[in-house]
Length: 338
Image (cartoon, rainbow, N blue to C red; front, side):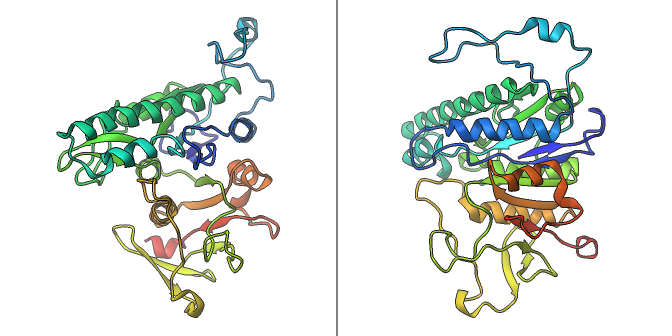
């Protein structure tokens, strides 16, 4: 996810957001979709930074490339570095889930050798992905800084995140950088350890920073009535109290459909979760998105690296949703929020 804003970097409570996903091949272990990652990074730059001139900040050697792209002269000519208030949060995709599910990190039991080894392996995997995303953004001239929840001192209690110290994130934004956070293995004061998903992180950031909007980038067009691979699946374009599909959201993030009565769906949206996904997949995403929407913040769920995601990232959808836009909007009226 990412938060973007036209306000000064000091106004960390007035950001506008988005969230990044669908940049890995989730069914292939630790395989980055390089093309999608590059497109998403470019779209972020175009939507969020004012300058069209790209001066890269990744000055490290890359596999298969002998030269290091270090344009020092390009920065000597710049009076300042483009900066805007936004945060990127990404999930693990094909990184981390395999290690966590095979060792049981998400279930706790840190005193067990297998779980402890899995904890280490999970963090190696997710931080590896984080570094690659940071580098991709840096190549687009975005001053990105990788930040791990574990290293920030975040911990859960019984798998839940009761509170998160966001002071380091806020200071990073104030300094003109773009924090890039990720789903992580963290310590848990009840069960020893747990997996903290990127979707949960987004909700806490949204509650603290009150962004104008949040964008979830996924590998499908949005939320469907059935798994999108099924022939009778229908894209749900808007979810909210006064939408065709209305939902009620509990304090714990649980949700249920209130209208219409979906006879063919048994009054529920059917969602599948991959066996190796330790964070709840789309189920968690919709729950967290709904809780963000209850704060009065519009949430867009849209396919990454498409023209539809460009419109969501740039804020074009806030005024009006075009008829040809494909994605899912989750919103609640101001009266509902109060």
